[in-house]
Image (cartoon, rainbow, N blue to C red; front, side, top):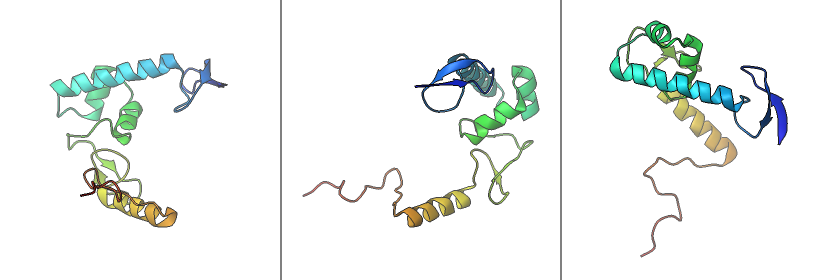
Length: 128
């Protein structure tokens, strides 16, 4: 276990893994996420600015949740773009095409084969 400073509040804490954020800031971020989720449940067409204003949460944090795939954009008033090609997307960092190219490229380069959720892996099939 190592000691680090929280990237949000600069408090010293015991770091285990994941984002370099203390437990208090991680819990505060999770509460913010839940406020956004509840607001969007009642206002599914809300814009980023409306969400930010009504929930008192920065647009940057909302964008972070979208990039992480935790939120999806339903409003046409805000456009998120693929970080590779610039196409409009509703969640994550890559469009489906670039994500597929990335998986294919990594698979070829590393010898790793990617499988769809319902596609059985070789050797996982039941023997008759």
